Image (cartoon, rainbow, N blue to C red):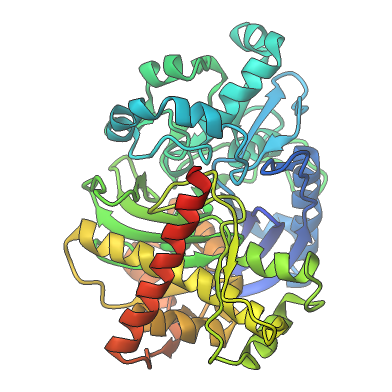
Length: 497
């Protein structure tokens, strides 16, 4: 039997990546493109959707070239994407009408605060909290700002969706307006029980339902390529999932109690809960995990809005190093006797606090504080936030969590993963596959297309990499966590004024 190849498109917040995998899960070629970030006002974040599409064309072509295979040899495409980011485009042309509003954007904070009393029923219906993070608040804002858009949408002229929907519309030459259940579950418009758009939620956010894409399982027929220069016509798009659900799948975390954290622009913890949605009592989100068929799968999720973005911030704004990979060596030189604390709430605090108005704060500065201490404290701040998520997930799931599987850019930093293990008091297992998110999309497509026959076969492919064991004593860990939580409480109180 000839070798089978899959193209995985991983469209992230700061970059787009394309990877060609073979049937052993080996990455044969890859390419990445860094995206421009637009900040028109404080706490506003936007992307150029046309640039995102261009990045897919370029990285897809380059990944195939690096893999030394022809596009005609591909079996299919898997797609994974930054979630919650929303785009509005014309049905007839596929042209975006404005920049995409990114998941990090906080422009709808006032709307969410004014409607806070509605949060209990929204959470029960969607598994989410009422926060600017989610797509519906952004789409509502766009429809309010551009008064003719709603009229055009109701005439069927305009479409809206998350990045996956926009890219599939372009990939299929305008034939498919679709999304998968994991992406749809991040919009505040999907009914968590029925896995379908909810008419009452659409009315609440004043969003015409006809703008929205059709919801399908994550392994499904999403359409075929059409009219592209870099891919042949008729190539099936067979696997789609939001980036965090794709990473959970790529780490072979298919069973209840299995957890992973992906450190990308943000840090995202997902704990699989199986066929039963667990409603959080600790401000985590209940979300749809990747679905291989019509049977729903669920997870608990906690989101840290700034993780790798904090390293980027130190690089670009503070000019403390020129390459992100240099931050580990700089942090290793820090004087640990200086207990500097960075709360990296640069775009607000996510779970389990959900305080969109907070901002980043540094505690403990002295005349001896230098670049090394600031970098180390920033890495600590990301790890502490993940520890807060893990504790909330443990309490919600009512079960001990034996370990944490990790992947993403910051997972290449050995010092950071040791910090994470020390703060958690649990082993941290780094994925042997640095492309776990893209691999998850490939796995979903490959299952649909018969490249792999079962999830058990996928488990045999996925292997853990290095294991980081905790070194701190129980007392030291408790002391440092208490100090961190005092700092977070102080930041929240300050920005409530």
